[in-house]
Image (tube, rainbow, N blue to C red; front, side):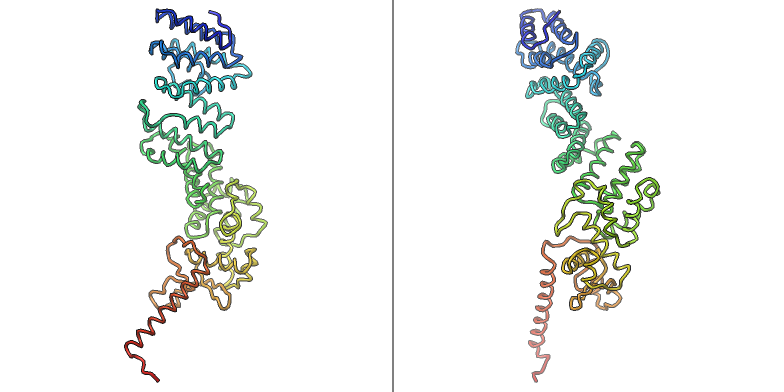
Length: 459
């Protein structure tokens, strides 16, 4: 049966077939129309879209016939792609797969396939009887857009798949697979806020998943989300764990190792980062397979050597866009990490240092250098104390000099705890003033108590 390759002629031919009361003959004639559309290759996606719309919106076709014909069309669209494995490949299906491969084998085959898939998928929105076929087409659309590196478009195609509140029974493992794929695509286009939403959904179901590739993709997505949200200690740990996975290519494992080293260097100075740096330094691959600049920076961070500006600039060349973000207090993530590191490194060289000298090392003014030191002391990331009258920072613990049990573990009156804690969102000058005010009030209360008990005889 010959059919002109334009939408109107296809529509008229299908309407003529609808007049046939023999359902078996009608199904055969519909298949003949589809065969004719594919016979000499496709030059336009319009005939296929018109063909699909007729079955999606028809109220006179028996459901069995509509499903059979529409399944054949989906097979044609999936032919030659990873999605063709969704359907059986025996008997009649094998014929349609072969015809589909030939139809989209031309120079514009990719564009025609994508246009046809988008047109059919849009026509089927909200139609419940073909949910399964629409899901397949959404996956296919995501695959085609991913090949074009349209990450956001591919993610949106998968987001359209109805995973909740549908009549179709969808296994939890399939839902996890789709959610993780969405997360990976959103991370590729820097949409990490939206990616976190779908990662949270995947986290609720991940315990039901047993597919190794999906589980690995989930762990990698978690590492990248930590990276994007500046939780560099957690990111470095996850990246390092993934770098040992044997199912990943050697080149990708080294990329994970490089990411682990980079994020560990960007992490805030402190005990947790020191443990991660030590673990990475023990990994022989860091020194044998990664660029020398990375391993040198890693060793300097671990051994608490002062990092010079030229080394910082060389390391910064390998950072991703989100790792160059400006942080609160001024400077980039890297500048903050190196600044905090150099404060601690000074303790390996000096017993004490003036804030003017420290400011010169850090590239800051004296007040900013003092604020940086105070913050690190308060968060338990620096064992030091401050002599404000002399404007000196002392790099030695006062534990040995304090006899009061309540004073143990403190430094310079700023209350350094042995465990790290979050800092209240107020300035350090205000915190210092509050402590002086509280001390003065205690002295006043003590004096009032002494007078009340007549412990001191008036002169």
